[in-house]
Length: 169
Image 1 (tube, rainbow, N blue to C red):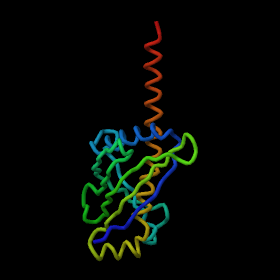
Image 2 (cartoon, rainbow, N blue to C red):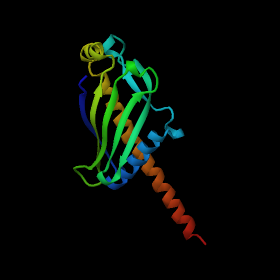
Image 3 (cartoon, rainbow, N blue to C red):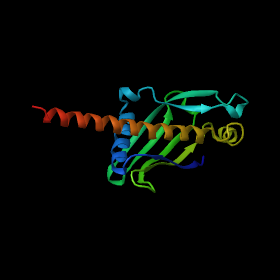
Image 4 (cartoon, helix red, strand yellow):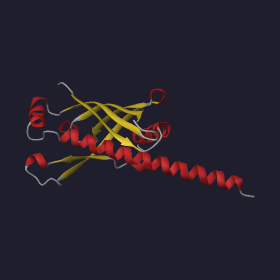
């Protein structure tokens, strides 16, 4: 089955080097199953099924991550933890690049997802669930942008505290 191509980004108000370090740290922790990300899940919006626009199903996911710090990216695979035959699998890359203004970074998600269940799944993806996988990945990317900003701020605060502790008599 052919993968559906995904290419999307979110701006993050961090210096590119700081964003790169944070995204590699967060994705590495996600891939390692760190406790902070143990409950990682993707939301699948069911509005295409005649449900209210706020009707979401949360799908716990496993992530395989391959950090590539020299290239400012991580290889990424997301799949449902259980019943993965009913949910798409995403394979691609999370990429950090300099934004168009100083102090801003673009966080990209590029790759593709394969609908589950062969031709039946492809038909549902093209009709009833049209755009559900893309919306789910967009929500994940937006969350990742906020999470790397949070992690970078925590790291900066901890570094500042250590420096202050060393400088005190």
